[in-house]
Amino acid sequence: MHLLTVADLNKEEIDNLLDRAASLKERHKKGIPHHPLRGKTLGLIFEKSSTRTRVSFETAMYHLGGDAIFISPRDSQIGRGEPIKDTARVMARYVDAVVIRTFGHEIAQEYANYSSVPVINGLTDLHHPCQVLADMLTVVEKKGGYKGMKACWIGDGNNMANSWIEAAEVLGFELRLACPKGYWPNSAILKRAKGKNPAISVTESVEEAARDADVLNTDVWASMGQEDEAQTRTGAFAGYQINSKALTLAGKDAIVMHCLPAHRGEEITEEVIEGPNSVVWDQAENRLHVQKAMLEWLLVDSGAGRG
Ligand code: CP
Ligand code: NVA
Image (tube, rainbow, N blue to C red; front, side, top):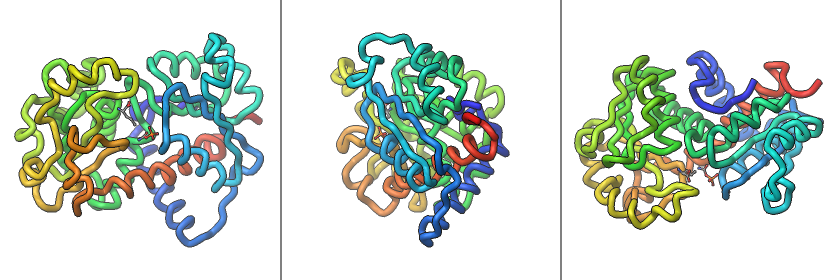
């Protein structure tokens, strides 16, 4: 079993993961030790920078009694061109699961095809499932659940937007995305998701998407790997910002989410990210708890991993 996209999971599996994450979080806060992964090792192969994903996965393994090994292209043979399919088969002889963060989603898929141990997508250009599952835990905590939720996405139709679309597809909540022309989410993902949940929509209008929303969410205008486009994007995305106007449209109880890192003054204002509606720090913390539930499920409950 691999976890490469949110849509790899069904509603029951996501609900179970979120319930388990909540109970592992409570257990951790009470200081109760829980070491089901003693003797297990997680490999982290990261071709892009990371703070949250790397640290939360490594910490998750330590909390669960296991170990983690971080590998970057700079200090491994990956950077010297060893084929991904060879790396995947070799790594599976050492570690019990792998988190991969890379560029093209097809690289993660190829890695998974050749890996006999579970592979978790730690972000590709197309998807960011671990973040969005942590976002769902945050929604459940702050809003009491996702049923009947009206969520709004403002900005780039990027990996985060695609994974939120898949969450809306599987869980059935309303999702309105406001993205500038030319920066809409992946058309195949959108088409399939809308076929299952007609309450997913994309518009160019921030006002339309933000009105009466329970959740306002955004991400950077230029993702990792798009550094060369940053200037063009700054022009295209002007106005696609979570600011006090968007918050007023949404309503005073709306929560403001951002996967981080944030660019204050671009996709979100300083006032809003530091304001009372912002849940970004709890959202970041929830990466840890959701990923602990994910690792336990993949490495213990599903019986996967090396024997
Ligand atoms: N949100 C997120 O994935 O952050 P990192 O890039 O720091 O891992
Ligand atoms: N969309 C951003 C998310 C970073 C966590 C990126 O891919 O760079």
